[in-house]
Image 1 (cartoon, protein in one colour):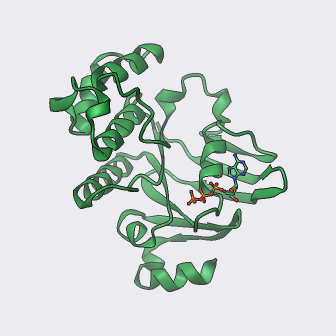
Image 2: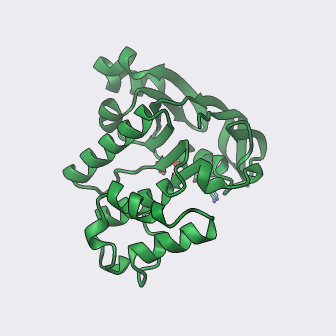
Length: 229
Ligand SMILES: Nc1ncnc2c1ncn2[C@@H]1O[C@H](COP(=O)(O)OP(=O)(O)OP(=O)(O)O)[C@@H](O)[C@H]1O
């Protein structure tokens, strides 16, 4: 189930704006990789191209050697959390996950498994509209894990979460990486990356500035980061 993310010379223009400028990097299995950069650096754009939601102007992004649109059963291979509000507020969490499972030919037993994994089992029959932000984040993660994917991509997963929620996500991501999965998460928070990521990719103005093991820079991360921009 090992799969790498490979980004080759990715360029994305929105009219006159160059959001990504020949961006290249690889994300390896078995570790948490942090995708770090200031607001507007191009992080979300790159993640959206990796996940087939934007088309690149040039270059390509591959998951396990294939573009997202070439993957036959994407939920089985890639789990993504881009937006905590993807579920309809009138639905229960269980219902939301069961529909996703049915649509993607995932066994219904996975619904209970992921509800347990994200600690929502006791509230699974409540409507999502009554959930806190932290609970909605957990539900987004449950949906991403439903197909037991080897690759997990999260855009700013700790935004708006309290200390307990942040610690919970951190330990979940560590567990997923230890299981040999490829975990990529974006953030503009260096402090969060210092305790979560094994490896960091720093981008600014759509270009890769650094690609480095966290152990090499942890002690001076702020200086390193600001120096890289
Ligand atoms: N759909 C779009 N249309 C036009 N410009 C866009 C679009 N999406 C992104 N951009 C521009 O591309 C650049 C990169 O934006 P992006 O959202 O990828 O950055 P980011 O690193 O994710 O930032 P943030 O941390 O603020 O989310 C910005 O200049 C942004 O304004």
